Length: 208
Image (cartoon, rainbow, N blue to C red; front, side, top):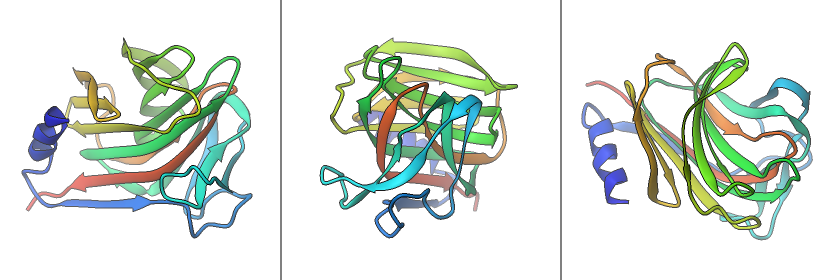
């Protein structure tokens, strides 16, 4: 956690952070949340809906992906960030092929963005960039990811620096320049993962 605080101080040293947290509690259940755009990279029929969940970190509602697709995503397209952070609480629930929960940033469209994800079937954390609809691996590391339990996935990014944290612990710290400039932020799953998300937070740095 100390590493995260040090990088956060660096990220926001140039100006005041603008941040907010979305909890889905005022959205109608059974449909996607207002202000979000949902889809899939590749093929499939993802289903993103707000649903009640008594175990939610901030009850009563969560966002759930219960369909399937190559790489389902749901982004807050009006949250355009170049440098800053994105964080979400997620609960892997089901999936025979995958049980993944992730976040995306610098999302240009459904075929170009960064994604970090944690997987309960593989017990690891991975970092990718997606270009032309193809996911390309930057790094992955072993990490404990329990199914049916809430976890926190956070990414801090500035310039080419990317820091990925799972449950407050640094998992990946890397430099990469594949995707630059502003883009949207959001959440992501893979294949047949049924995953719940709550307390989606994001922030940006503004220069004085």
